[in-house]
Length: 197
Image 1 (cartoon, helix red, strand yellow):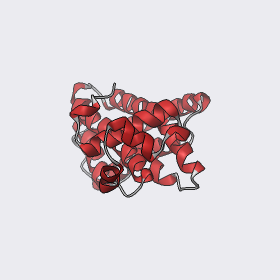
Image 2: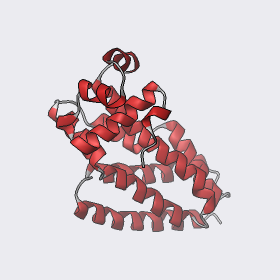
Image 3: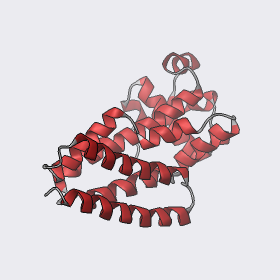
Image 4: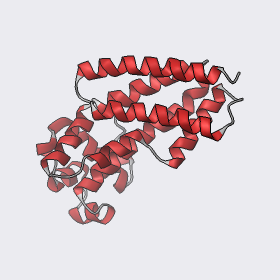
């Protein structure tokens, strides 16, 4: 469910408008004119906040993934075990990776001859800050695991699995195949962490 566009600031309105527009109309429908008309701002406002339309889309992916990450952080303490939380986390990330918005963003980048890897990098949120946040969530379930090397290794496994899923997004059969990969990974991670308890 999208929030009401008129309740957001200009930058947020452009990001949300881009997600809605490309989700509903596809890559062909995404243009500066269509976006500014959709959210009711001038082209000057668009290019004040973003250097290009591609930057709007990159930020839109980052925004959606960050939103999911924040939501996961907010509710992970409601779970009784890491395996249940990881399963839901993987499902949510892959649901976005298979969504019309994400697939049309990839299509737009490919049609323009641009590197879609930058989009996938944001989907995987593979950076130091997110590694730290992931490590904190793991430690919530396994407080005795304090060795940074071990935590980094486990976070890398989790985020690599998200990256692999995004690289094969869009096909239901791939989504089903990666569900099997997640289940194997979750078992391996939990087994590894349980050795510390």
